[in-house]
Length: 386
Image 1 (spheres, helix red, strand yellow):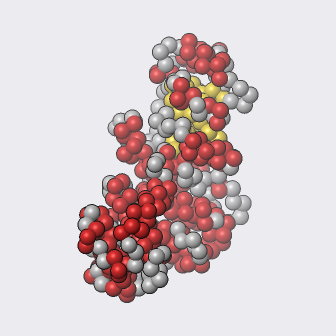
Image 2 (spheres, rainbow, N blue to C red):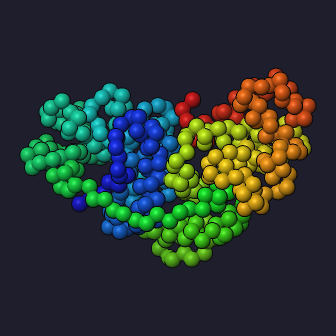
Image 3 (cartoon, rainbow, N blue to C red):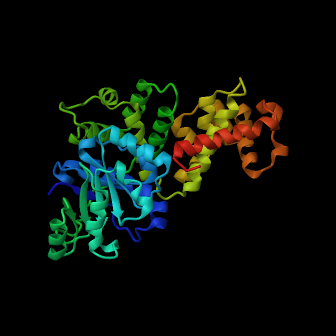
């Protein structure tokens, strides 16, 4: 036994449509479950974990040390320049790369120069002879070949005879479903933490305060930093020390993971709309000295929180103790931030003739390039292909 593959179950249909709609959540649930609900060491016994990474997670590396994670590139992911650059970054950081469900297609073969392990799908091949043909064609020093979906002894013996290194399938063991109790994350704290982490001048002390006010998030953070998957040799009991050890980038990725894992019942379009509003508001505030860009970003991001969390904006503003000008803008569309929120809604409706141009401080000619920048920022933040 050299490794385990961690999968989200049940998967009703592991195809392109299902992966597009649910893949990000599945990866989030797998890692959250293994790291927090059960414990990665208990699940894998200290061996590496093969984890399917969707296109988004290729660009947002998971908070697990390279020795404990093998990143699987799913067969549906296109070998675009951006995706291949993201995989190269993972390799540079020490992660091993596995190409999943390989059957010899020309497009999928473009991934092979970046691969450490090729997982050949026996059931997807036209015939068993292709196993040797593919290996002979693409073999190079250091590249390992894994026979996937091995279901009987004859298949195992054949693959072993032609030089395959690793084997996986029902011949060895059927997947074992492990259950853990899922502790509910404080969605408000997760979103507040994301907002703080995405500021250009992200303050470690502020992030520590947010974490320290939520027992479950604090528990999860210390659980993560003390996991053997993080390579920590001494016990960490301080939130501030945990933040310093992990660094803001890793905490940002971890927080994104938690957010995706909890906001799973909401459509992707709602997330895109909230982020587009946030970046548009931030861009508009940059042209208006009476508006603060970070506050404007929060206004746009939080303007749809009632739809995300199924609670009223009044309750959200009360629980977060937002500044008066931000609360008034969100709840009553009053003041400069109220006018900004109205503008965001009018943009979405296409009612540019009703936008208070003088109040927001730009002209219609300036709006189009501003909206284009906001859209680019949104797509970058959510890793959406252009």
